[in-house]
Length: 56
Image (cartoon, rainbow, N blue to C red; front, side, top):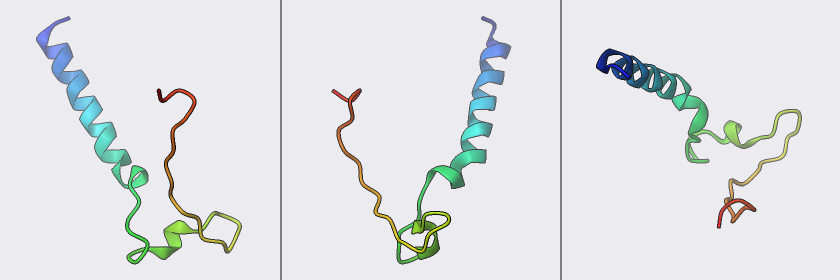
């Protein structure tokens, strides 16, 4: 793979990461409580992580 192709791929990846950044991060509840409500409900949710089936 040529150097130019590698650079184009890196640029594309950076563009996608930047474009999706606001969709992949969640601000603290105190700053944006409306982001913690499931669509179609009035209930707040909590962000939790746990060990999944694939996470060994």
